[in-house]
Structure formats: structure tokens, C-alpha cells
Amino acid sequence: MIEKILLADSGTGHSEEMLRALADIPSMRRSTVTVLHVVPPQITTAAMDEKREQGSKILASAIQSLNLDPARVSGILREGDPKDVVCKVADEINADLIIMGSRGLKRLVSILENSVSQYVFQLSSHPMLLVRDDIYVKKIKRVMVALDKSESAKQSLKLALFLLRDLKGGELILTHIDPDLSGKSYCNSGVASEHDPVLAAAVAEAKQLGIAYRCLSCVGKPAEQICQLAEDLNVDLLMIGSPDRRPVIARGLPDFDRLLGTSLSDYVRVYANCPVLLARTAAT
Image (cartoon, rainbow, N blue to C red; front, side):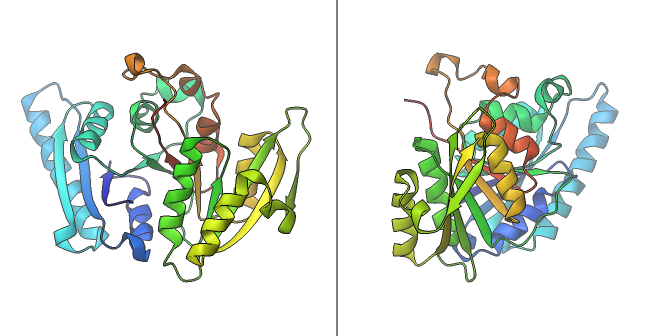
């Protein structure tokens, strides 16, 4: 399921720690990793040469720090606008997962400050794992999946099952949030939640694979409730669906509800206090 990983490494943040945490998961041990560092354009040739040299050192340091089988790791040093290059390389290698650091900037601030992760989040069709600079990356044991009836949510479940199927001590937390914009919020757990139509199929798959699980059926504002549950349950990795809703003709343009920070996935990537994996499926 996750065979090709693109690690977009800027030399800062926790993306390398995130990859090391993933590498400890049995099902991930055969995945190949491409480490990408992008050198932005410079005004003078001398400045460009200096940036290339710095970039080469950052790339070499990142590959060494991952401590993976050399046969499974390769490096790419590119010049250009980091936002465009990350998307292009992800397409070139047909990445199953992009791992990036994120400053967790809100709404238009991320656009105005030229955020690379926000741009890639908007325009890439590949699954992304975003790691905010201000969170602590933990060993992955508790994986929470927020489910609804969308195809992208089903894809996030598939990825979670892939990660947890051979992980000793792993736990799958299945959640379904029934929207209630009036402000009410509450959760039910146990047998009643297992029979929630949105969760029932996921429960059956977890049982078949022998994965420990628990269910929570909740009412409330979905984005806020998801972030609160992730904090309350001390989740190590949060997975949600993030469908590409744009028509084919507009795939090269930003999705403006994401740009403005009004989508669920945009809210969660900013406010969740753990790494967030955004599963992607193209709109039909």
C-alpha cells in the first residue's frame, strides 16, 4: 500500500523523525524512500553555488540520519520553487505518500507567507503526512481514523489497516462524527458504536486482521471534535480523508475553501496536536 515515500526535507522541522517512526512499523520496512531537498533560485551565480553546496550537505545529513538500508534510500537535489518541485517529483516517482513539515499556519496566513506545505496540500493528488513544527513525534501505536461515507475516508481506513496489521501493541481508534452545528457534542463508545453503519464495516475488517480497536460515535462539529478526540486519546497518528473536489479542468488551480481554511481537512491539519495523514482520492 505504501511502497514509495517522498520525504520533502527542508533541513528543519520533524519530517525525518516522522519517517523514522514509520520505518519502525513492520509493514513499512520494505518501502523505498526518496529524500528531496529543493534549492530556491538565487540572484547571483555565487549565491546559487553556495545554496547548492548547503543543499547537498542537508540532503546527505538527512539520508545518514534516517539510518535505513542504503538500497532503499535515494536523494534528489533540485533547483526551483519548492512548492512546484515537490508536486512535480511526487508525480515523477508516483509517490504513495509525501511526508512534509508544516508550520501549522492558519487560513490566508499560509498563502501570504508562501507556505510550501499548504500549496502541496491544495494541489497534489498524493496522500500527505503533515508534521507540525511544534508537536512531538511519538512512536506509532494509537492510530485514529475519522470515517464518513466518502471514498477518501475509506482510503484512510485502508492505509491505517496496512500500518497496523503486523504492529504489536497497535490500536485502531475508529471515529464517526455526526454533524451538529448547534454546538452540542457528545460521544458513545462500546457495542452501540460498533453498530454505527459508518463504522460497522471497518470493525469487521479490523477483526479479520486481528487488530485491536475501539469505536466512538460522536455528535458535534466534526473538525473540532476530531481534534479534541485526538488530544483526549493521546493519538500518535490521525488519519482523515481529504478528497480532491476540483473538476479535472481546474486541477491546476487552488481549491478556495482549502485556501481560505474552511474545509475540515484544513482545520484538522492546523489544530490537531499530532501528525496528520491526509488520504486522497480523485473526485468522480
